[in-house]
Amino acid sequence: MTAHFQDVRVAAGGAEGKIEVACQLENTGGEVWSRAAGYAFSYQIFDPVTDTLVGEGARAAPERDVAPGQSAEFHLSVSLPPEAGRYRIFVSPIKEDLAWFYEKGSPFLLIDSTVKDGRASVARHRVVTFGRVRWERLVRSLGRAFWYPWRSLIRHRSLIRSMVGRDIAGRYRGSYGGLFWTVIHPLLMMVTYYFVFGIVLRTRFGNDARPSSFVLYFLAGMLPWLAFSEATGRSAGVIPECRTFVKKLVFPVEILPVNVAVAGLVSEAFGAMIFVGGLVYFGRPFPATMLYLPLLVVPQILFTLGLCWFLAALGVFVRDLGQILGFLLTMWFFITPICYPEASLPAGWLWLFAQNPLCILVRGYRAIFLEAAAPDWGALGKLTAVSATVFLAGHAWFYKLRRSFADLL
Image 1 (cartoon, one colour):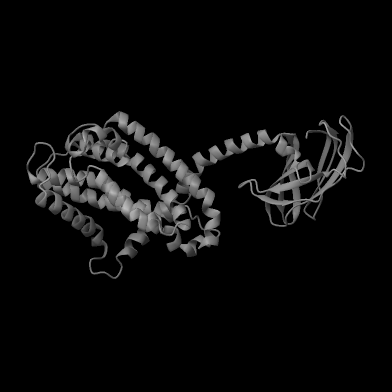
Image 2: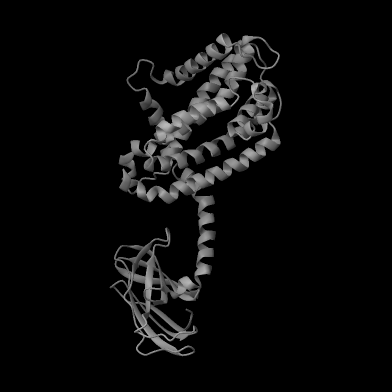
């Protein structure tokens, strides 16, 4: 099933939103093209952004049988949808109830067109193969995967900032504590864990038997966990909670998971204030290695954002995801050495626990704040690579599924 295009002529058909196509087609296959056998000439229209099939055209059957090596003239009038936008047209022979020629590797005519105010125009046309189109789609998709997440963050940074402020202020609106709960809540949680593990269970880090040692090491480990757990725990329900925004076609729904991730960072910032207060209270120095903090925060943000995009999209389809996440986060907390020293882990399993991204972050935070040491560069490099991959994959997953959100809410 192959054909060779010759003398291709493509022209916009005026105000009716039509494009006229004429060409000579040479039969380079091994079968005779006949009307009785179901051979015809037609087109398919695709959305160039999502590659979704928009519609198919009427068939133009050959006026006579075309034997292998012979050519025939074909004419088509392509009717584009009335909606304004860009469209991609595949013009190809077809054998009914079998396949389009282009699906079998035969060259076909590709037309990029635009509809505006009911008028059709042709941007370009060329004869290509489907393999070439798929390669171009892959390159285009990779380009979008790398650029679109950053474009969303940069373009909507003012809206993100505004929505995060409203989220934090609205979370405690009407309460007596107000915004002070942003400090009180992490403080109470840290005090609770300190009482259980530091006082009751007498957990200690290293050879330092002072309770203050446990407090500081525990708080240093809790800093990345605060931002991560709050953001991922809320992400599964953020789309259903904001269904009014989702159903507005002009609203950038991809920033909703970003809002919860940034709000989690705000919680970490307040936790950092408590931690700094602890350093001052216990008379600990402020090491110069604290300047390495941005190198830890960047992969932490990328990893958290990627998971938030993934979980937010999945939460639209799996409504029980929020309850499942509560259990998974609790388990994740206890397999991360935050409230106990790494020496307590089974020696044979240390290599597995070391693959935990939160374990690398906890080690890094403790190294720069309490041990006056640089983070483990090898582990940090691997974490950054994994975080960047999760960031891009999470956004691609969200971007692919977001068009179905409005129908499911």
